[in-house]
Every structure is written in structure tokens, then in C-alpha cells.
Length: 113
Length: 116
Image (cartoon, rainbow over all chains, first blue to last red; front, side):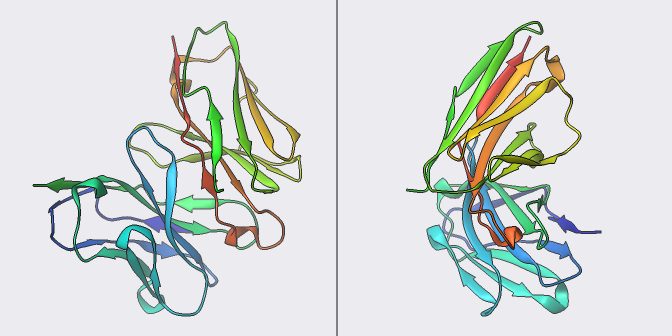
């Protein structure tokens, strides 16, 4: 069965420190992978996506993610976190056969001064 | 323009009320979605419309009734809701068509619904 696992419910980093959010997926074929960010009371905003090709993808707001097929992972990274990055982050897999998107449980990022 | 507009932003309703949520997009997308999101949880898919036809209903109770009057507009009609239906309701749209799993979904800011 298809699934997305985000092992960390919440993470706290200091402003200016680097960030890595983990995502593991289970999917039979080549997955379509997404990272979304959600600020409190807001909708989801796409940070980046992976469909094929270069396994290191760049997104908005200085984020990047690396697709590692051998580890079934798609971890999100940022070299220097800003206080405004505090939010909920969702990793997701797009279903190649249809409209359904499978979301991970989310990781809440806290940024301390 | 990648905007999906949802109205109202907040809604409080009693269990006997009838209300509607509205979603609009002008990106030419042919797939539109309703999600329900409870606090500290990921969005849960409720309905998908493709080319104005209902494509997916995730066994949602009949007190939720979706409608897609045209390719730009999506409504969610609410009737006789329960307090446990209180949540953030998100609308999304995507290009639609073949290989839809590849489609990027653009989300609205949501309607915060409280059922008393």
C-alpha cells in the first residue's frame, strides 16, 4: 500500500541553523513527490516537487529536497532557517493513476531566537 | 495567477442550519478538490471533480453535498452538520487530465467551520 512517513512530529531549530525534515515513502512505481508548507490557519503552499530527472530539486524560499530511490526518501533541507519558516510541513506522494495525493502526518517546525 | 479563493473565511453554524462554502479559481484548471483538515492532522480528501463531473467521493456523509456549476467554481453545501464536523475545509485545483498524480494542487486559504 502507498504511504508517506514523516518520522518527526515536531522539530525545533535555532534561527540561522540548518534544517532537515525527513520523509519516507512507500510506492510501487516512480513516485511524484511534493513538499507543502502550511502556516497556522492557512492553506497549503507548494515548496517543491519531484517528477523525474535530477534528484536534487530546488524550491521556493531557499528550500531544496533530494530524492533517494535506494532509501525511499525525499528529505527537505534549508541551509539557514529564518523565524518566518516556523510552520507545518507536509510531504506528499501523487498517485500516478488518478487524483489522490497521499499526505504524511506533517512535521511542525519551531524556530527559536 | 495561482490563486484559489475560498469564502467565507470563517463560518459558525448550528446543527439545523444550511450553509454553503464557495471556491473559485481562474487558472483554467479542470480538476477541483474538497479536503477536510482537523487540527494537527494532514488534509483528508473528500471529493474530486474532473471536468465538472464528480470523480471521487471518499464515502463522505450525505450532509455534505458538493456542486460544480462550472469549471471555475466549486461549492460545498452543508446541512444538519455535527459538532465533530468542525474543521478547516480546504479547496484545491489542478490542471486535471491524464497523469493527474503529476498535477500540482493549488490550495485556497480554507474556511474555518465551527458547528455548535
